[in-house]
Length: 587
Image (cartoon, rainbow, N blue to C red):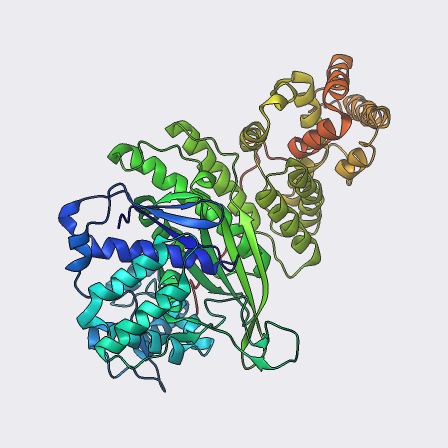
């Protein structure tokens, strides 16, 4: 049979499905000998299934002569031991736990860098630790180890087991019943005493916890569901290949992030995913969602940029969203003695990063770093910051500039309040990076951004609000009055063009009058007046693009930071302490 293309059904519609596809890809690569070279393994979303394809067929002799391969290692915990397995296929969970404890204690008490601790022989958690901790904490060790032991029982007939796996995914839709029957015949012939089904635990089956699970509503019993054991084994394998489990900061709740491929080559995935794992630190619930998307895009573009020199990514465009469609999010609520799936969601990756050149890649990397800094500075425990994070997440996942304007409108007030309260000033977007973002979404808005009148009025807004508040927070002499709530006032009148034009005219009149008054009374004028030509230019833009668009852009750019002014970027409070815990420290 030609195994050039294999298919994994989207049987659950949850992050479980892509986990199987990644595990199948890993298994194929383990079977193919090194001398075969790169066979171009790709995982693609084809609608009702994930297609795992090769550039050349999987040769029959490779399958027939395949040595035993294992995708998972069992956990030896305080109470669970996989004594039937060889040492190489087992993990000393307690030893890893102790190493992690010593590392984090040293990091905290000695205030050393990870590099310095490494020289002392102390290293952080291994990449697989968060998945191990999740399996242990969610009481799945018995089921997990049982699947590994059952896989190991096929070590003397591994080519036959491999053929069964390939036959399962060779048909579309997958004929699970036929493959179950084939496996039962193999198990009987080999004397393997094992069940055809295994428990579908929420660790890798988030939509299948205990509850009322009768297919026909003729009664209600509390129990779990079972599935074909081979599929359950592959789900756990996928957990280590394309999922990032994290605990939610400040609670015992859990989140797991799973990559949904659009058309992803395995080589690209191997370059990006390990680096992505290192950047996604434990954080609060909504903020971690946002950072997951931003960090994946940033790491992808950095790897793409670096790959141009080595030729690794040279044939591919760099838009992250064209390779990975979304990040699936599983939210587990801690209920005291157990975790239960509370929510399943997906965060679409941005499709507004058209990257074909190194310069474009660098521009978007800098933009993403700036946005990461802004998001890290938002404390989710405060209602205003929580709502800001929700607005930003809507923008990021929905590709909608309107949601971004909702964010910038609220963020302008947030920045002013923080400055007025003498808090450490939060990061602000900079004008050049705002231009990159707006143009990436809608190049037709470029005449607005390039118009001198628009820029001068945006500067007037800045010099009336955040620039003055910045000076005040640094003990500067304020020549002019700070106009609190200016952005909100302008946007409240943006529904109708004539009302917005009138409100903008009142601001400009007041602004020019204040300039004249200070020039007369204090013989100083630090701001340039707005001219009638500037206002007329903006009115023309309103007629062409609509008042809401022009108003939102004025406020976004008016409250942004001009990198050419004396204002300096803030770094302390806008960044989380690094390195944060990448997973569970002592679970």
